[in-house]
Image (cartoon, rainbow, N blue to C red; front, top):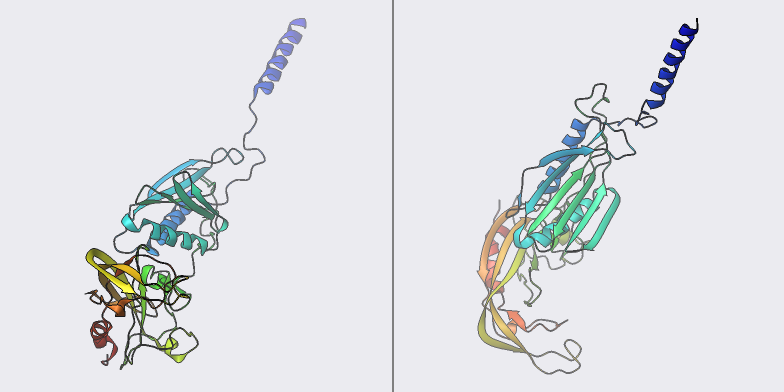
Length: 355
């Protein structure tokens, strides 16, 4: 009998030892992921594709999307995964412009936790969280012509784990309401970022009998020089274009985007005279170094930014007709002006004949 009691005591002791050594469930009390990893991974691809398609133009190249996954955070289930996606954009000399466009994309996409981290060490980054919990980020290292687009999903149910959530329940993706209408009639984004800004989305299409009203927006990529106003003195150039409430603005069908590109120094100077109120406390003459210039013209439809025609004209005006109408600051470099008559002659076939 004593032997039986001894055996029972040993078994009981072993049971107690085994019970004491059992590891606690690390996922006890944690909520399983409500979304499946494959579905989140597909949504991340959609975001990176939309960000590129809705901002990039010719000359910028987006790499294929690379995908990976990582473990969920410690506070989440130990078996969950975090889908990730990334691609780069080779933007060249226009990297700042594309960073601004992608920043605008994120800012307009109704993201939560939107964050512009501003000037970090050697770069900039902006990010935000989408409807389904994906963090979208754009990063730019200042010394590089390359941008990095990243999308990181929420903790998700792995594809190889049975019993996952029902698919098809994700909310609609977060996207900006593009294109938007230009802010004012001289918004250069109509020309530099035509996928996100158009002159007037309610404008009539470029069709039917003429005349077709043509607005002009001049812009330049460098601020180190000045150029005279680019104007059209034609019946089909809207004269009340700065008032958006006029019929002329509403019926403008085309926008001539004029990009001014200085090239080489002519070796000549141009002297211009201004009143004291326009230039300086005195009315002394102002001398400008005259530079050759090309005027690259892209004619776009006012309603959707689509390209109708492209051409380039040289700057040829180097007399007092090229003096700036007003002088807000004094840059000594001035481009040869665009001959307004030659400009009108090139646009006339688009504006006057019936289509």
